[in-house]
Length: 139
Image (cartoon, rainbow, N blue to C red; front, side, top):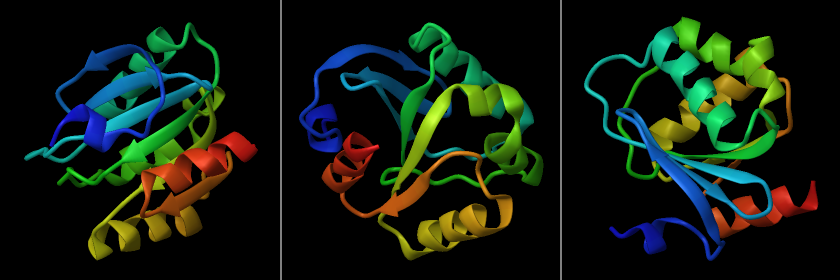
């Protein structure tokens, strides 16, 4: 699958590749995070690393985050989920969260995250990446 078939038709500004995800800064203040297959549990250190990457990509400014799990296979530690939902430093870098999912298992986990961990920003689940971008553009 090529990058063009994964991302909607938005201009790419910059990108960073990490062991757990590929980060792409797009126009309209969007950072697209395409998660990878990860054998080990995604822990708190990886979560903090994601915050640092987003801060560097967007010059410490808040951005809309698209969390693309369509090619991913991973599990989060409870500490990492809590960090993403409620950590003050991470909360400052995001304006919204759009989850792009295909599998039923990912949808169940994402719904649990939204209901139980209650992220401190607008957050929604999408099947279609274009719908995720349309929603972000209405915020």
